[in-house]
Length: 92
Image (cartoon, rainbow, N blue to C red; front, side):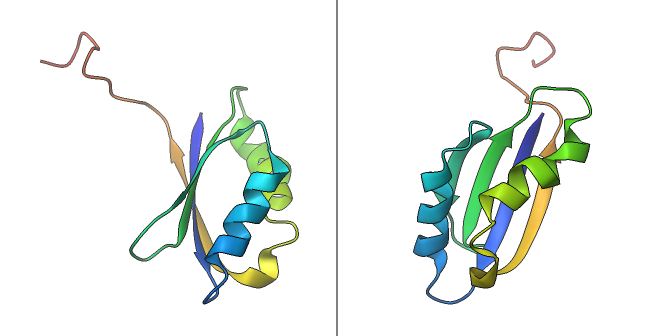
């Protein structure tokens, strides 16, 4: 199961938050992007076990941002259930 975490940082803190997350090298974190628009950062995380969504906040979110909450204004997490691939047989 994929999780997309959108993070809005306090002004001037985006780089510090991004670098702090990268330094943790969490195995669940696949990518961290600096993005434009309403959010400053987007994190793509992957958990393979069933029922993972209940443990996600404790095992990933809290660890990922543990020393950075003072630099964060807001987060939003979106769960990705399925990846649509053009090579899948149901796509015409």
